[in-house]
Length: 572
Ligand code: FAD
Ligand code: NAD
Image (cartoon, rainbow, N blue to C red; front, top):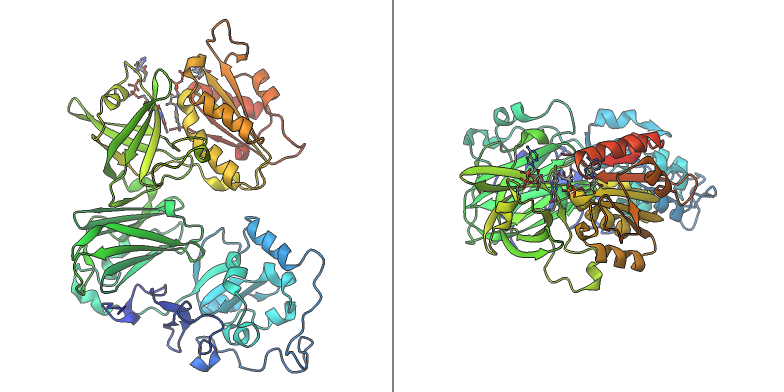
């Protein structure tokens, strides 16, 4: 398909490569042909393409006579120390250790900066426009440290192409990625276009005020088109971006996309210049922190510009200052779970992409006797035992909530009166729980009271499915009576199905027949329950329920010598 990009390729949003273009730079500091359309082993990617931004002398590499050169094969391997095999390297890259020293942030690297990192314990190398901190890899490199050091602090692309053209370095060095080489700033030709948004560029004056002075570096965006689609690309400059880091709403040809980057939000908010279909797709290329939103054109015409900027467009602001954005969702099912708790299923509009991260909540908004009432609720999965039944509904289009109806409450009786098909406003996600807290955990303890069980649902599902170090998950579930226990049957089934999971119920107002644990949260109950599977196992605790329960629980956990780092209290 033809690419019908508007604007001058050199005048784009500056720092990051255009879609369809790649990471290599030509002599003028512009980005050269794409990495994807020109795979690593293909002739034409190599040095013959002309000078690169940093010209490393194109001597034979390894140098003739060097210890790495073997007459017939061209290069030899050096013996690696024990514990430094390829498998050991892969294990290290998967351990979650910060291998760049930049805490997951991707930066733009200037030539001056690159040159500074030229020592064994601080060695950055640029390969095809991407800069890697190869110090952690030194001892694992089959060609030896000296070979890597030849390119220390420089553009090693030419050297790399001679020796390693076939090596999948992008995957091998993924965790060592520091960022991209900075492009020399180009003055956008389209500044005269006033408010129009051309290829992701706004006149500088419109954006400078809203870029933060501290915090993660500011993302940028760009767009390109084919005959049938328009793709908006957000360069977050941050690793570990997932599909739940981006929320997109398309309403009446206005597009709002919010990329959540740590505690900041980057907003794209545009009145599109042409009509698009309501279905769109969102892709995330995690290791380079790129988000792509692919819109389908209603008519196959070439767009001259993307659209007009709307409120807070192209801003990068602390998340707490973005305000809540709502979309209307339809109630499509409601099911009794206990005498006063129901499972609600809401359907997101087709023109929304929203995935609530594990343990986070959203706000539901209803009009109650003319006033707008907003309350927070924590989405759950539709079941704890999803592989016991066919997934009836496609994921990510539906949000489930377990909600207790308080007859004298303000919001929940109104919610309970909604009929199937009725609409309710749902905000984007909030909350400070991060799944990274579960990395490498061996013993996970969950303390829940009443509907404080809701954040535990996704935490539990996530831990059992994704935390390979996990040995044990124990849930202590506090309720007033047996009738109040949410999903008791599912919890018991899960415990019999997965030996890592244990559940214990504690009742504060039990019937005389109850022969399980009784009372409120106490030191005695907790110290017996919180037994580690190994003496020094890595442990993490989550606690949620009525405020006095959570506060007392956290106080007791401190008494029992658990540190703040090991505890997450879910609060408003
Ligand atoms: P309210 O009007 O708040 O009343 C609640 C109860 O308090 C009623 O029994 C009422 O009679 C009583 N009450 C109210 N005012 C007084 C008063 N002045 N004196 C004495 N008693 C009073 N709940 C869920 O069910 N599921 C969830 O997933 C969930 N997630 C949450 C996530 C977060 C982050 C937080 C903070 C709360 C969450 N909640 C959840 C609780 C939810 O937000 C509401 O607080 C709850 O649904 C009650 O709302 P309501 O307006 O119906 O009741
Ligand atoms: P509930 O009144 O049925 O009580 C459940 C259990 O909590 C009781 O059996 C008791 O063991 C314990 N408990 C209650 N009051 C206590 C007190 N004063 N001191 C010590 N323990 C106490 O609970 P519910 O009506 O289901 O309320 C659940 C609470 O959880 C709500 O306040 C809700 O706001 C909160 N919640 C918070 C979040 C969150 O912050 N993310 C999520 C969901 C629910």
